[in-house]
Amino acid sequence: MDHKKADEIAAQRFQLISPLLAEGLDAGKAKELKEQICKASGLSERTIRRYLTQFRKEGFSGLKPKGKQSQMKIGTIPSHIIEQAILLRREIPSRSVSQIIQILEWEGLAEPGQIKRSTLQDKLSERGYSSRQMRLYSQSGVAARRFQKRYRNQLWQSDIKYGPYLPIGLNGTKKQVLMK
Image 1 (cartoon, rainbow, N blue to C red):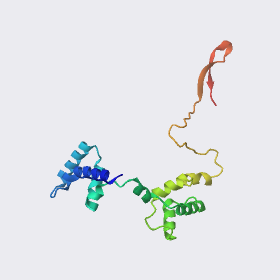
Image 2: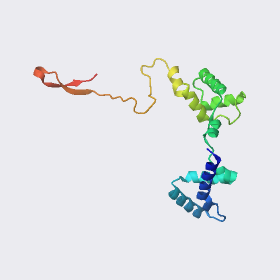
Image 3: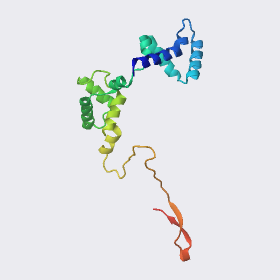
Image 4: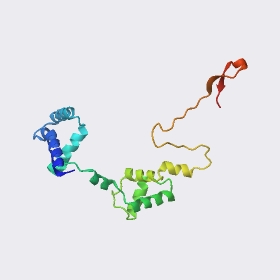
């Protein structure tokens, strides 16, 4: 995104929140203004709060869109850390993601707070090492295993006892078929 477009977006966001920046604004009036802004703009109250927080922290530049590249770098975990996390999960399949992160931090492979639990959980799941997948491998002697398809409505199943009436009786009379 070019700088001109980012400045325009920041100016629009500033116009939205400018009534909320007035000094001496009481909480009731601020809430009423937020509701009016939300109705007029179609944005959520949470988004308006986020704009206010960003403006108070960073000024006008805080209202500029961050872009996808900067957000992607924050949430990524280096591959050598993911490999180490997989080894820790394989060593003890019941080990939680929080425990894995704690071990990685203790060993000095990751800075405290560097790895987010949900991000590591997603990475482990992508590679087939989620806690649910590990439970499937650790259980033995189970007659039926759970499975799921990747997308909703990709597989439909049903379980019925009585089937349709078919002409299989004497002289072609219809009889109900039992399903087993």
